[in-house]
Image 1 (cartoon, rainbow, N blue to C red):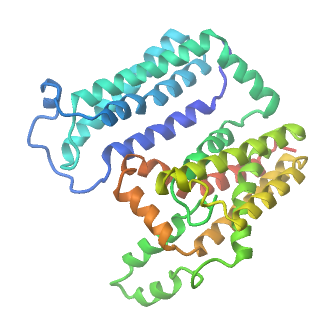
Image 2: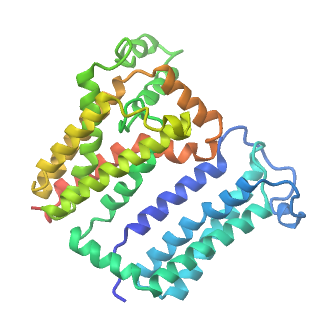
Image 3: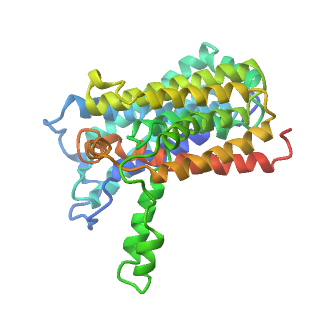
Length: 369
């Protein structure tokens, strides 16, 4: 099999980063362990466990096993070797996380967790093997070749991560990039007791409106929040009707992820509470702009996407944190979504900047016309 550059490789590395973050959260109060690091492996299996712990540990490593398997097979290895590599690599990562948890008083290393992670990774590799035997991976490659240009793995990975970032509460629908305000807070605290304290209070103050974004700014932020991933897709896709379908799929993914996030925070009965008149109008403007730009040359689409992302980040930085947004953040950071807090939050914060860096690379590339 001819080796191919696969988006699965990038996604696997990103998933590893998220696993490390979630496994070692909250990253505080580190200590030197009193017991031998491997002592947990010989302990009896705990009698106290919940169905959520069982399912989350089992399913949490299944995508990683699948992604590593796919990357191995796309790189030219046989399915058997790919499955073996996927299982032992994911298992080694899980063991490393359990060993490191010895230094965190808030985390307890568990041989049950390691076994479930190993089974989950093997299940993901088995799923990949089945898809390979059915020819589904080859069909995906042929579909990708018809829809996207060469070296599009980074953009596809970013497009797949975009709905994940929307699961974490946003101050404006589809408004990713909220990390700028948090960065200001961190920098202000760093210079608080230094000669730069006065400068920090003025230069690092967030430019927010009194109660809410003006309607025009909110509409623009929502429209740009939808248009930006569409233009990212256009930078690596072939012009024409395929782009129109791509934009439609991106719109459905954005609406679905935002609806799911709202349902998780406020209950299924309020799942569409975010879809106000302004949000609907912003979605319409963004979708219309995406359709009109479906025949834009790839390099021009990358440039427009870079401008859209820059404007989006600046608008999101000005959005106030109302009571509902604060309640959503509390639920995610302190409540029932703590296990998914790190993954969705970091994706939401960093996605626009990663997309900007990627688009800059596409603009500088000589391969795009």
